[in-house]
Image 1: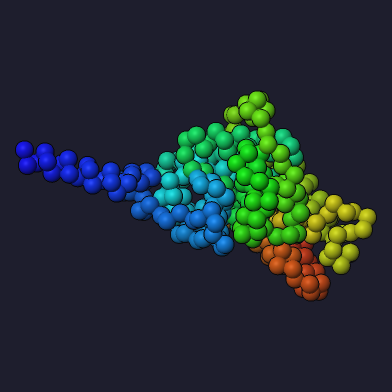
Image 2: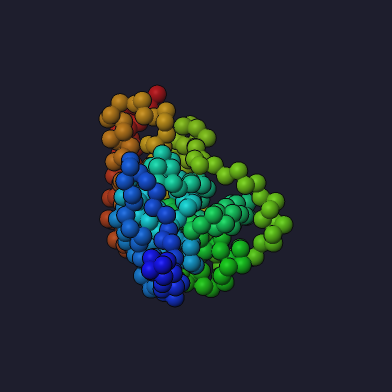
Length: 322
């Protein structure tokens, strides 16, 4: 009798205190993930870092934008946030095996630094809507500052979950550079999609959106490099005869292409030196993008970095191009 009264008392206390089950912590190798993490607030004025993931910003309850997960710790942190689905808008190939080991589903819908078209907007909106039916969602690009922010903002406006003004404000919290006007435009011009419009979007989203081929990737790398050449000639501003070229966006596109190319399965059979050159080339392009997004006005410094990118490409071509 006493034990029954004790159990009843515990139940009453729990109900009164609002006890609830914490988000699941999937087992990995027989061990549990870290304890549930304190989630970022939707009103926070600055991003939050967790082990293995950076620049995390809440766009609404259960929708988080941030950087790409860095190995085991990154996926542990995402799982500890209660996330069920990860949507990557980065060009690089997602780490599917690690995600699955932590009970996470992956959707890969890459977008560019200049924004995305109507078809991709609808795909992002449907992917987010359907994923939220299963639980919280983590949207990431490489840094978690630009593309993931634009994708989260546009998708939530499209679902009628927020206004364009609210989402543009969250993009600024993420640190989205004004240089990426296309990403801001995708959010500021997004309209609410009807249920019928969303349901019309095919829902068989890929875990990995693989590139269409090495030759196409190399053509795009050459194109981005030529665009940067024109931008340099214009003094690292938008060329008057090519108003669609945004300096930071082109540098980001080149860095993304090089990282993506270095991850292709067919390239893993290349000699170690090839992989080293690819990593160095991607790093140099990334540095150029960082300088441009930071508003570096020293044209000579930007040109020196661009020349380092070109020289690295030339060295790789000399050694390995057929």
